[in-house]
Length: 505
Image: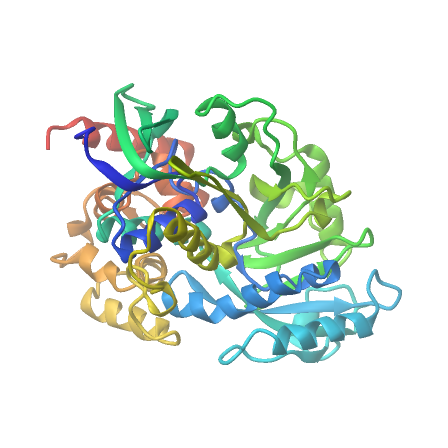
């Protein structure tokens, strides 16, 4: 690395906001470096409820701008990445005497249908649960429901695809790279980084710094910048449980709890049901966040209020927790804190500018990136125009309703793939699945078998194309095959990846 080269932008953080900003900036012609301390989406961005949604409950808190922007983004993002984003219908069972009256829910869903420019997603309808299959898994006391549209997303893959596209457009992307210090010098930033595994240090120079460290945004300000008493974000813990499949319907459920909080039960990875989330303030290190016994009890009990067959601790096959870095607006309850994003620029007048990113959500990441680029343009000069709304993420270059056709084409070309395997590969890699498998004539051509339908061919692709360094990166962020591999199989994969990285190239 030539430390004398001055880049336009240095981005700290490889979550959805950092990668989205890096991609947008690189596509406009800015020179970009991005440093992620661990792996892409290793924090908040892979611990979401995995929805591309307007945020129906945010209407209660009068966040109309945020909801409208999010609703408008649903179909934009679906078109950008139809392999990792797709529509989902949500069934909201209604019971008299519940936390919200029917008229309020109807009003919310009317706004939901009409303020967001919906074109392809079907509208809200009323469901008779005594006749509709959606009523089957529920307790018989629920007779009526509202059904509406939102979207589902493979959150961790959305992040890595943004990083991949940023790199394809010229960005210098570094994982396992921690920012040690950042200081202003002669109108630019001197940023010293350290590789967390090798200890190698490098110095980068940049005209502008973007702090998109998510839950660590304040920590970066205090450690790398040497500031004290920094408090911009409110950390809110959200935990989820994944249980054995509770229902076979492709629709998800939206449950209202007596305490006013809401919860989803979502079909997940073909064989499971995802239930969450919780909302509670978090005081510890975001790296140490784990689901609490209290949260497990809350999620099981809340879901059991609706499902005829109770959700028990024995049903749980996996849990995950994340910390949402919400902008601290002084709200009294965690679930009332704003989900909107706040961008703040420091510096200027000869001082190298710093852009701090607070808050945000998966659904509005692209719009947040556009807003960040406005700040960047004002600070260091404009390059290029807005371009991401009509763009495609890697592998997503097919019609929004063309997923099944892509699976059929892949299965036809690689006839040895089991139907579920072909479907999974298209879900993860879209049109790039065929590139990954190019030249394979039999299943043996995919190389070593690690368990489930994970083969060496895919692992090597993830290491080469998607920065995977450890088994955890492959199993829990890139593929979710961790739900299917044994501990011994996961350990064998880790050994294989370590040897592959140590081997001379």
